[in-house]
Image (cartoon, rainbow, N blue to C red; front, side):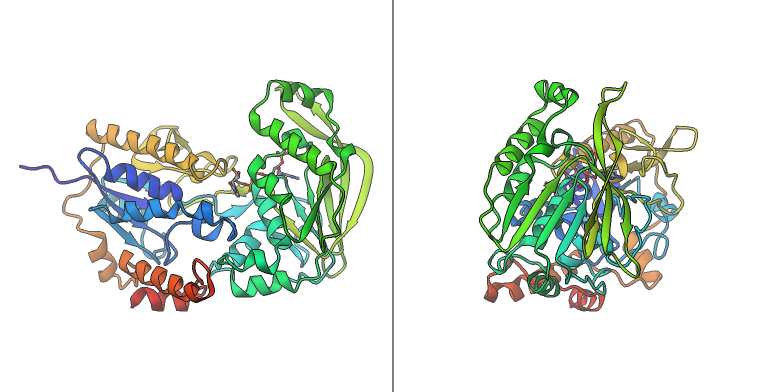
Length: 454
Ligand code: NAP
C-alpha cells in the first residue's frame, strides 16, 4: 500500500507561512499544504506592511507565487479561526498545523495621552496607506506642521519617509489613492523621529537609514551633539556588529550636512523618551525627558531619565515601538513574549511539553524581529521538526475526517481559493498598468470578495 501524503495546514500566509509551505512541498516525500488566511489576499506584510516605495523588497512575492504553483498547494482565504474553523478542526483534518500568523498588534507606550485623537499606532498608518481592508475607514488629520514618530526601528523610518515623499516619489508606487492624496496635501513640514537610546543602539538598518538622506523633498537633520557617544557605546561599537557602526557613520554624515531648503525636514533625535502626549481634545504636543545611557550588569545599554524635559509641539503622533502577537483561540499563549510558547517551533503546553501536531513559525514563534529573509531559516527549522516528528510516528490524523474544502462548503463558508486571489492580483495589476504603477489595490472587503469570486 502506498503511503498517503502528509497533509499540513499552514495558518497565515505571510513570509513565514510561505517559507514553511515551500519547505513542506519540497520535502521527500512532498507534503500537501493547505494555507489558511483571514484576508482574501495572501503575502501578509509583504502586501500590507512593506512600504509601497520599496517595490524591490516586495519582489519576494515572486518566490511565493512559485511556491503556490507547486502540486499539493491550496489556498483558503477569507477564513477566520474561531469563526469559520477551530484549532480542533485543523488537528482532526491534518497531520500537523503550523501557525504563522505574525504579530498582529502594536506595543503600547503606557504613557498619559496615548489614546488622544491624533495619536496613532504606526501599524494603523502602515495598514492604511497599504490598502488593508480593515483600516480604510481611518481618517488621518495631517494638517498640523509637525509629525512626531516615536521609535527607532525600520517601521518608524518607513512612516517618517512616507510622510516626506513627493508626488514624483509616490507616483510609481501602489500607495492607496486616498493615502497619496493625504500625504501630498498634508501641512506637515517637520517630521521628528524620537529614539530613546543613542545612535549606536538604534534598531533600524543602514540601507533604510541611508535612504532618508536621499529624499527629493526633505532635508535630513541630525544634531551632532546628540551623536556624541558615551564610553559604553564607544566600547560596544569597537567590538560591534556592522549595523551599529554603519548607522553611526551615516548619522555623522547627515549631521555634517547643510540644509538645502527642501520643503520638508526630517529630524532624527536621540536619547529622548516620551513621557506624555499632551492636548485637550486632540494631540498638541509630546513631552519628552532627556536620557543618559548606562550599561547594565547584563551588558545592555539602557536609557536612564534625567530631570530635563522638553515639550515638542505637533499635530500628529505615530507610535512605532514594535509589534506584539495576539493570543489565538484555544491555544496557549506566552503573554510576556507575545508569542505561542514554543521550542524551536514545537508549540508547548502549560507544563512545557510539546503538543503533538502543533507548530509555529515567524513572528508568532520568535517575536517581531528580523527581515523577511529571516523567516526562511525560521520556517525551515520548524518544518524540520514537523518532518522529524512525522518520521517518529508522533503525528496522527483522523484518516476518516475528510477534507477542509468539503467542511467549508458544508458550513457555508465563502472562501477565496488561489484562483480567486489570482483574479484579484490580475485585476489590480491591470488597473495599475496604464498609470505606471505595479498595481492599484482593491481595498475594501466587498471589492476583494467580488473579484475573488469572479
Ligand atoms: P523594532 O526594530 O523592534 O524597533 C522598535 C523601536 O522602538 C526600538 O528603537 C525601541 O528602542 C523603540 N522602543 C520600544 N519601546 C519604547 C518606548 N517605551 N519608548 C521609546 N521607544 C521605544 O521594531 P519595528 O520598527 O516595529 O520593526 C519590526 C521588525 O520589522 C524589525 O525587525 C525591522 O527590522 C523589520 N522591518 C524591516 C523593514 C525593512 O527591512 N525595510 C521595514 C520595516 C520593518 P529600544 O531599542 O531602546 O528598545
